[in-house]
Length: 256
Image (cartoon, rainbow, N blue to C red; front, top):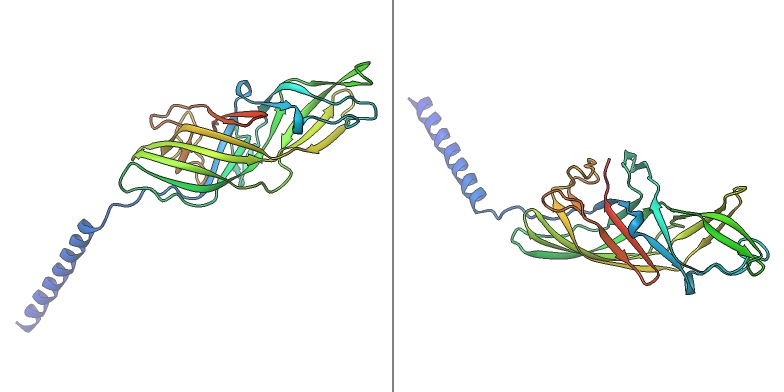
């Protein structure tokens, strides 16, 4: 009888613990929808990407070779050259990577918003067509290709993330970029490199999808599986225009 009584007491105690746990789980607030720190991978749209060579971005005379004229030009179009891998993972057609340096605390009630620091960490663009460099007041001309990447660590910018509901929302960004331009003469491969001024890019009103990228965007475990900028909650890729006074960079979510 004593063993039976002990067993009943133990069962009642266990039941009381289970009931308390259930009450706690019911009373606990819903989990937040924080966007973790991480990376955003993009492909460049060449129809929406250009650089003006004017003022601080003009190339001075004598830069290419003795006698070369200053290079000033209207918009020169650029497209992306895929990085192929990033963080030891296949990165599809991504040519641009922005790092979110801190988590964005959002939810559990919406709408909500948060502002976080960001920086560009990878860029790999090439001119769509060669440029023409002239010498001695235009007496000679030759063709050069341009590559744009980053010379090193970049200044920090910020991203403001608005979340409208559990499926996502919109974001805006202010992103300073200091490009490195490598010019390659087509006829013999001679190269010249210059680091340009910091260009402040701004974007606004672009969609993002909670829960990460889905086709047609590229879902890369550990990279694009929590936050997908440029993708609507319904899975439609949308162009994000990053604009500066002398440049424009149009990007889409990375795809395979």
